[in-house]
Length: 202
Ligand SMILES: N[C@@H](CCC(=O)N[C@@H](CS)C(=O)NCC(=O)O)C(=O)O
Image (tube, rainbow, N blue to C red; front, side, top):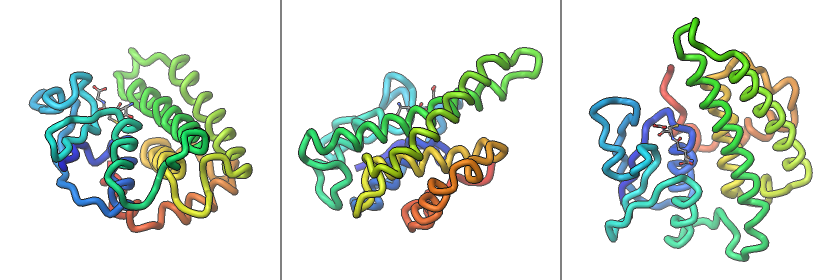
């Protein structure tokens, strides 16, 4: 099994953490989709990482689909097998991925030349991040799709979103406004699966 990923992608980190938590062997092919010489479109027509090449040759992409596929391979259960029980986990994953989507969009906009940046668009994305963090905080308190007895996909996606904020938006200081989320994240981000997938210095 081969994972095509960049080392800074929070979506790819979600899958690398899931693979590590499940104890599934894989090889990592580092590829940066923004470079002209990228091979990512050979795996995913959308040109995005992560993409997973299964042992039977099938290629899976979009991290939620890859996560679903990994559940078929065994290892620790990250998504409950029961469809109804899986829904809160998937909801937390969607919320966390949405926070990540907003952060990626704001980051990309902020990298445009100063005169070409759309500050209203950046603000709109930052507002989504703040609303998303408040919702994540509530889901943590209510134990909805995260912080159950065992680490699940909701927890992994949430911690990857928070890790990405630390990586790209250190100025956001979410820890002081969300102390419970911060305490929870400190534990999760200290796990070997997260430590070994920390993005390299920007
Ligand atoms: N919904 C996708 C998002 C993947 C994604 O946007 N990956 C970024 C890297 S962080 C990418 O490959 N971007 C390249 C591009 O948009 O062309 C997933 O969950 O896998």
